[in-house]
Image: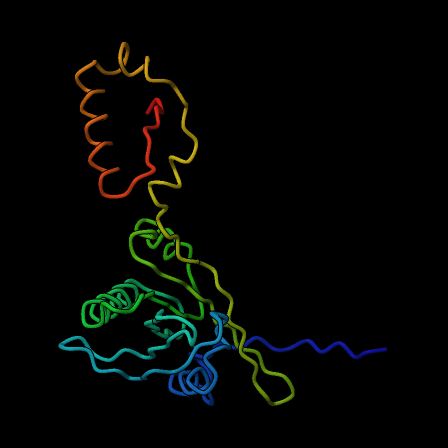
Length: 205
């Protein structure tokens, strides 16, 4: 029968052998351990103009997506949120050719933190990851769990995919007039002069 081992959960913040620098180095050596895919290290302790240092800058190997990562031992707090968003904003403005995402990694992601972040999630791409450390027979294990994923805003076309179909008569008699339909016909002619094959759709909205 296999032997079940119960690991001891520890606080990194209160541990004399571990510290933020050690965790930072472990992520830098293998960024995939935080669970965001096959990432590469672009920089660490990256100096920000008049704003301190960014803990880690990671990039997806197969795309132009970059992650501005901030580490926090113990519980997440307001200053940690502000600092992470500030670094994300600076990098986004300096290197607009990349798709940027802010990442907060903390030992304790509080409910208050999640409530605050949810207010602007969708407008600021932000991921929150809870970091847990365990001691097993003198060694340590790190587990990273994504507790808040970014919420990208939907496109207009996605929300208007289903349309109530009407006909030309609806726009002539109920919604528009003969003049407005004539204007639409004229615009269609102009479009087809440039690239042929287009026709009007008489959707209700």
